[in-house]
Image (cartoon, rainbow, N blue to C red; front, top):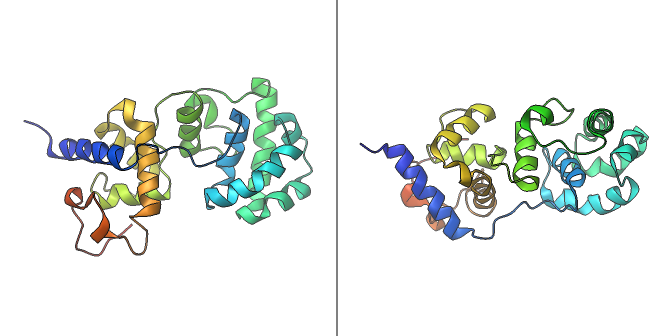
Length: 215
């Protein structure tokens, strides 16, 4: 007997692929270090705002060594508009220092190597692995977390538990693009405060349409 939840998850995957065939990482970057930095900056901040400041930031700090030896006060000023700039600056300096000491300034290619680095959790690691190295992963950001619960794909609030629920339901080869497409749908249709359920093409697959949504 087929698992109804897995069947519905498969239909959601296929519908998202139809709706967002060109879904991609919205952060702008030219190399792995730039994506690492941009992803750390994107915490509690929009990708659009991050993209506004990174051209000047990457010109000022072109490699891991430059970030590792940066003056923290100067770095804070350059990233201030992204919010939580003090902790982000501290993490960027510490992270790039460890990249230099352990990996010759390169971004490592495994979850086990990435997660211990300052400022990098599983979400950031999945962004890096999926977009840089074609290692499938589901980054559970605020959109993926919200939509997964609304769609009944997970009952958890903890991002790691949600990630594991989704990994059990979604084919591995789809993980990275599924994450991008969920983010696109969250930004365009399934908003946090006022989801546009009447315009949502996933509504027939959503168990909570017609009732007040929770996150």
